[in-house]
Image (cartoon, rainbow, N blue to C red):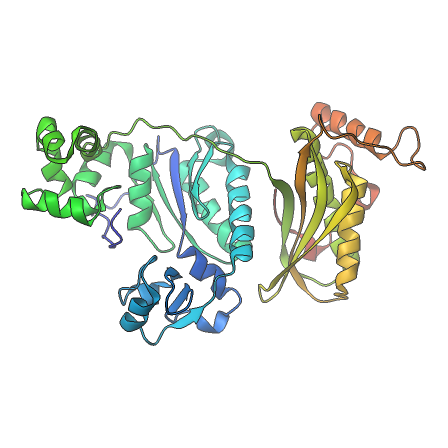
Length: 416
């Protein structure tokens, strides 16, 4: 898609768009790498910032203030600095980007299992199966946007439509930090009101070729015979653009998932200082993490924790285990050990997380019991809890320390 920003076509009437059938969402994190980098540099918010390498490198990302000066991703740094000499240059932090991306994808997975990531910062979601429980598409999209901002400190833009193509177009037109719903009945008019450069897959060269033949808008493409476009651009590209010009897109959301780690984290409603409250939260998260390991048939070789401070500064620590595990007690023990070793005392925390990494299949990984472990130990207890949860629902059996009530500061949003 062209890197230029186009304005959404104006709708007729002032009524809210009808989102019936708009069950395909395209969620795109806004200037992701730049926005994530600014979490550690809040003083730079609202200023031109470029994330990238040295003078011989290329731009990884840029804030919208820098983009307004013509800076784009993949542009040579030397050219970017010529366009925007006042910009601040920040080095990439790929570990941070990976963490935030995984957390955002987990938010999507909380809504629907039908998630198709396109990259670390965008994905399609098919929410048809979630509307009965979570409400209409507009409400679901707004809740996703709110959670991403609340839990990760960055914004995203969402397009909602009846097809992947129209949803992606919509999200690109409403950036940054927006939501655009394209009613199914208005999809053709919406698409045909756009310039050809707004279409997915039309680059500068294709745009120039089309313009040379008087084809400047999507409506121009729609009124051009299909065979003529195929002669002009080739059979596949011509047929594809003709379909797009009529908002036709039969592709479904194709979930893809590579299970390399699993975990859960919790963002507190207000910062929490009490170490005991933090440890109760770690127990909850360890319980969820271990449960997901068992459901997936995985054992973890490494346990890590994440803490995020009030200023959004994030620290992670990890510990390799003597034996791979899917046992709640062992996951929790490792998490508490890592937390205690950080020596945080009563430092206020915004978020804590527990993650299991280095996953191996439980079917091919032998699990050797400890010499001092009772015949019916923690693993048997966990499986009994799993059976109770399957029969009576989650939370049917809980550790006693988690039934004592939740302190006000612990009320929060949680994600797996």
